[in-house]
Amino acid sequence: MAINGIKGFNDILPGEVGKWRHVEDTARRVFGIYGFSEIRVPVLEKTELFARSIGDATDIVEKEMYSFTDKGGNGVTLRPEGTAGVIRSFIEHKLHVADSVAKLYYMGPMFRYERPQKGRYRQFHQIGVEVAGVTDPKIDAQVLTMLCQFFAELGLTEPRLQINSLGCHECRPAYREKLKDFLQARLEDLCDDCRRRYLTNPLRALDCKAAGCREATAAAPSVLDHLCPGCEDHFSRTRAYLEAAGTEYEINPRMVRGLDYYTRTTFELVTGMLGSQSAVAAGGRYDRLIEELGGPPLPGIGFAMGVERVVLLLGDADFGVRPDLFIAFHGEAAGNEAFRLMCRLQRLGASVEMDYEGKSLKSQMRRADKLGARHTLILGEEEMAKGVAAIKVMDSGAQQEVELDADRIMTVLASGTAAGEAGEEKR
Ligand code: HAM
Image: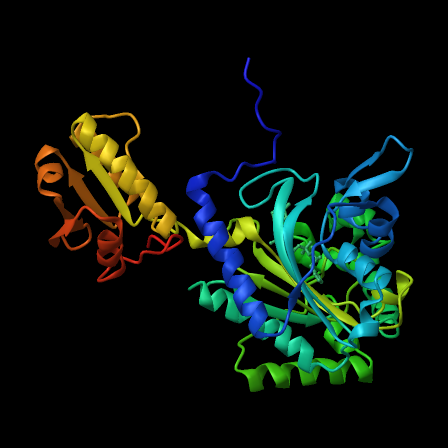
């Protein structure tokens, strides 16, 4: 019996990979414009790193981590998110010594034991960024503007930016108590999860989707009315810088993040196009995390997007690679010549395909079509005898004669619509 993959762990098949690469390449390009460098950290870390950073009382740490004891008896976890590992690495390698501002990005798989559904998987991929060392809200606006530019460059206008401030260790405790007082009289109306979290994480009730919780918290005190002067100033300057940058946003005072390390600015890019999984990207400031993990007292801010969700938003757009040329042939001698030409052209850098098995000319042309070849060339006895063949531009139907010589063919491929360049996108 065949062995299938694990539920919630997806294969990304060749037909989809073009879209993934387009997303990754766009991120690298846009993040590069803003001065970010790539960092690659392991997928496996000590379990306590996530417990300490994300928070013991969060859904992720309580119930979603892939944790196990390795053969040496160490408690380890497959990373459920990227921030903790990147900050661990930042501290371990003292990156702040070389440069007082670190602007880092990363991409790769994350693991959470969640109930799989559209847009929610157990292995999923994030592209994320982290900035360490800047307190001024200019960086909040830069990070958000960069995120919006990334989506705009993908041609996606749908996800909307929502921002909030969760205050800091000085003002949030008082707000939390106020909210608890408010919720106490309404505990009966909250869902089981929110009732359970009432003591440890009461803010979660504010963004719970359960109808009872929505109703019960409709008149709840707003965190934005309880910010200390420092947080209030940070939030208003963040908004002013966003406006200066021309970045559109909405304020959502009910936005609460599912990870404990956030302070001040938090944000999500939300869409109505993915059913109940509305957040395509999310993040915020974490001004105490670096110190709490044993590093210097430096502030931080970052976000991560779910690549599967971005790819879903891109829909049917085709980013597959089109071969520059498909050589079709009839007859054995022509097949050998086609093979020889293909090899030379490939060595010169053209992406060339042919049928390896000697199928009928009709089926060869069907394959050229299916692959989206930019040009086709048909080789038979007559072409072999004359030493020339017709090369056809598939998009326009235009034809021209060319000598059966790799350099001559290269020139034709490189002119007109022929890119002569592997990696061009199908659109
Ligand atoms: P997060 O909100 O847990 O934040 O995840 C960020 C994004 O990852 C989500 O908005 C969503 O697009 C995607 N995502 C999360 N879980 C899944 C899943 N099970 N399946 C598919 N996609 C998912 C963080 O992870 C923070 N580390 C973000 C951050 C970086 N904050 C500061 N720096």
